[in-house]
Image (cartoon, rainbow, N blue to C red; front, side, top):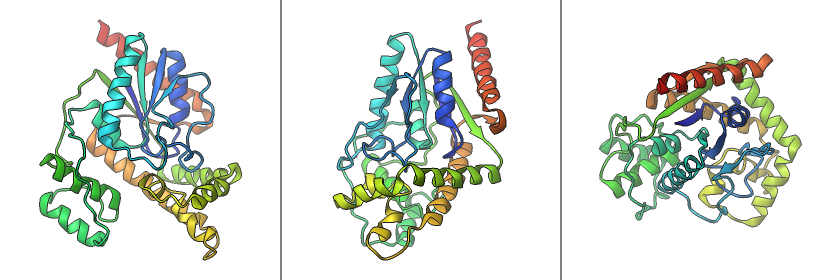
Length: 292
């Protein structure tokens, strides 16, 4: 059985995953595309204390390196095999929906040998190109990274990225954490404030001074938004980081609801331990049912 913990940014996936790993003899596989990289720690919300629980595919690449969903699919499936060979439970954790689905479902990727240059296209022009091949796409026109990925995927695989892949390759249980939108947005805002206290500006300054502007650096929310500050052009735009994080959370909800069969749990933030117990009991009951 593979357990997947999904949901929007800031909802509590990390804490739940560590709790579950301790109680079901599990090991965690990171499924957040930004936490793959070294030196991107605070802004990406990377776990600070693993509490002794093994974590895989975390900080495995330098920010100068490319890492695609094709790479993740291959690496994550190898880790699942490795963890299961030890008699343990793989727990896939992250908010990058495509990573989770590519790992668990019957996506057949070929290595992305062709990466087109879209620098001369506006977001609107790129979106029009995508609509020509996939009129029913659910990708937002301003989500440039996903639009580019979908176009490159079509170039390399001659099929649509949005094509439904409904066959699970593993016996899987997908757990989603959710809460009221206002509560989540307040948590996201507070989380950004905490990042500042933990040294976000110092982390971004180090990246800024490196002059590295790869996709690894420019994709996560929290780095490029602060570059104008270090260029002396503006004050730190913390509100922009909060706004983009809230918008991202909304897109994550939409994606998970439309793409996978998720067992959703409302988070009790006044008693998170109860939420953890509810999820654990659900998993144990499912495992017992399947074994009978």
